[in-house]
Image 1: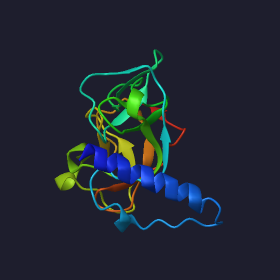
Image 2: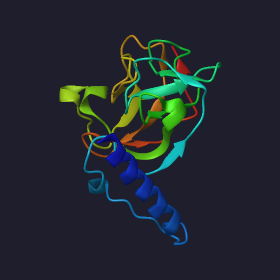
Image 3: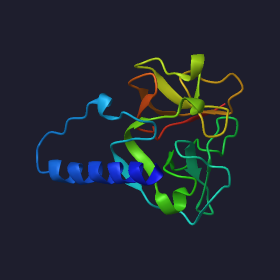
Image 4: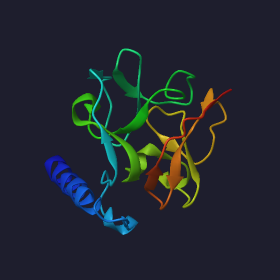
Length: 165
């Protein structure tokens, strides 16, 4: 299944390159029919990854170029670092999703029943690697990472701004 998703995403990237010759690109969120499908920019960087990272989790790059799970419970855990969505359990090899729509696994969405409220801002959650549409009460930092466009689809576009609490 993982290879099929990679193939699908590679085809989508090729389609976008072809579409780049057009002046307009159209994305319909219903095109993202399965968990962990995306349409957007992928970044390949880093030298290693923290163990326990799963596809779809929110990750950041630390100063040793290692990808780690992001958390709002720590001021140095994604608030001002490069951040993205892990495309595998080894994002240093398989890349991170840097910007665009992404269909998340509901287990990484904190909130009512593991779903987003459409149109809401999405923040780094206290639970490592997770997302939330509310600012957690015990957060040490706040950073918007995108907006929800469906119950499980985020338009991932991390803000460069953050607030340490």
